[in-house]
Length: 148
Image 1 (cartoon, rainbow, N blue to C red):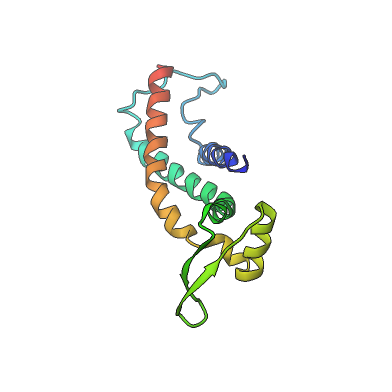
Image 2 (tube, rainbow, N blue to C red):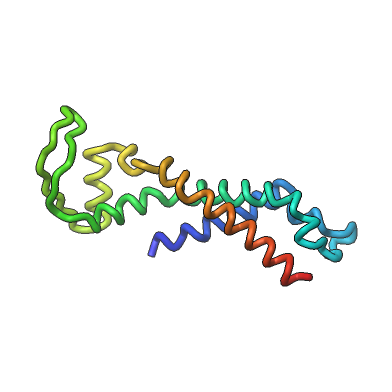
């Protein structure tokens, strides 16, 4: 249930970025009412901004909610397996038992520190940001079409 906050963080960040960079106000008249929006072709010069804001919003949302993803993944992992020991680099057998969310959090914190909650966050961000950038650009194009 907590992972549903990811989309909320992403959209809130995207809307805030649009406001900060003035994208919402670009097509309003002086009296505050919306004027006729230019076509999607006229706004293509703005698409780079939408791509960047979409990618940045995904990176912010992923980084914010990544610890929850790590805990979820650990809870879903097999209880027995092999891993490379960080101390000496040797392969060792392990038995992982988590009794729930709180237990998993405390064990990750105890064994790996705060960094354990962010293992792989940059690779994940590089993987998901481009898709989100294109998604938000298409979202804006659809909004333009529906508003015109």
